[in-house]
Image 1 (cartoon, chains in turn orange, red):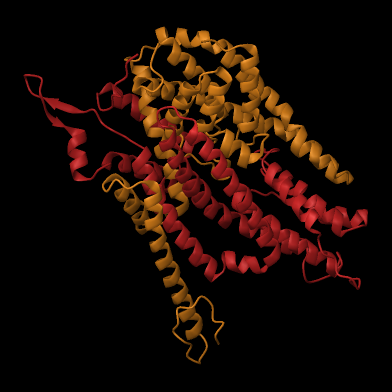
Image 2 (image 1 turned 120 degrees about the horizontal axis):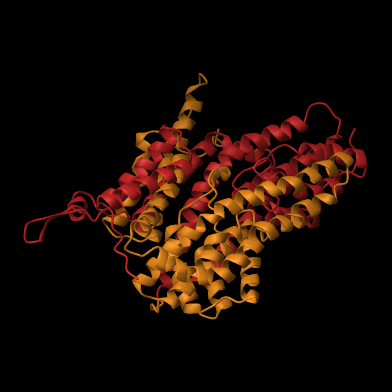
Length: 286
Length: 285
């Protein structure tokens, strides 16, 4: 399996659309086209092997399922994972003659994707830095009252950043990468220390993503309790995520009612006249 | 003083403003001004409709040059709220003292973007997306495109209509929305959502994050008499996974180490673990 210039260019366009500050907007871009599962579908269609594409996408999605970007603190920019890593992983799976749905193919996809995915960080900072140029032009337009120019600044010029930091890197890496994949195989054998380390990092990496989310929710030790209840439901009781969510709703409802009752009581206690003790959401009955 | 006929934003302009935000909130992203330009393009149709005078337009637009960044999906509500505030400002006359001015609008934006980012990250990115992806992954096992297609349809419908709802709700409620979002009721809602977020994140962690050790002690005949992973699982299933997550949280929240550095620490941990035989992913070509 090889990747032609035409296929590589289409992958390049998708990389431009799907990055964190992607040109398709974050709902359609980052959170749809950028997800490795969708990247697997698209790459599979472009390279003409849907099954391998989806299998590689599923494997990669598992690694990046919970990685978030609060305030851009960590660049979980998946353009390189979805549109460079997955196509190259597909080439590698073919080169090894592995069955698309085998466990080894998934492992190979994960290691390739994670390795190539690190490029995404560089591409992310490259794009964001180059966008400073367009923003500068935007500020000048605002000074002059030339507001129509803002549309070009927000929707047009960033394409140039993506030409340099999404399109060209994807084009070159996917087209020439297919032969590099072969070279990598001999340079880094699977049972060697570097590849073992890479895979282990791949398994540990989602812990950081989860921890970033926890940082938003957890202030003290008690805030860990919901997390561990959810963890126990899934790990020990083997419930799936929808079931865990349904169970969490009842706790959320109880805490909401409790909190509202407490604040209603406080408001009622403050004035001299004793308020009612209802757990109503607002004191509209007074 | 305000003119007799009250200015009201047309549905068409509001739709335009919403779509500008829906598409462009992150396209001109930089580390310095993350979503500021998305905000400017979204407010432009509103400002143009409310003020005929070029000077008034410039004055209004300057308000939105302040830094803005939040969770963009849920953050749509803030754009809706400011649309309503801008309308109120246009009706009182732009240079009117009291009422709505630059400081009110920007104070409100600055006050909301933090809490909204917190709720949005745990609700949208931490709960909603992993749950839809989780269902989709199950459907795509074995190489079927069905799961991917399911995800594309469900997420985009929820994303588009959810954001649309947030925008128009924000516009409708105006500054009353602030009370709901950061008042006592807002606090209660945030706490309730944090509980859902916490539990689902726990479920996501247990379902998809797997840290396993390959450490074994063998007797002279080569038979393993202690398989550490089994021992750990008999204490608490997923103990090692949970332990690593808490470690990462502790490093970031208590030691103020950046996520990138935590990842580098994990690389070192992985290397050492592989060298001493604690980790072995069991790979073959």
